[in-house]
Length: 75
Image (cartoon, rainbow, N blue to C red; front, side, top):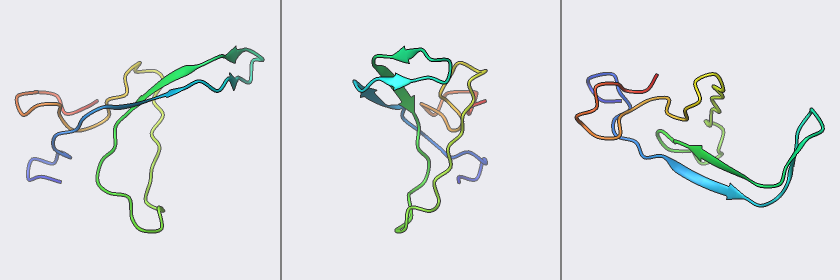
């Protein structure tokens, strides 16, 4: 973490899934696109991953900045 308490510059990543996703409601998404960001590095045993789900914001951006001049560092 930098001296201004930010994770620094981040870049959104994305993945597209063609496999149908069955929802609890019974509906099915035939395909979907997922946008996410990662921070830091995954350790050797892959035990330091944290998934943040924040459906109410409608945005994947949690922390960091896309460019140095951004005023907001996430939520």
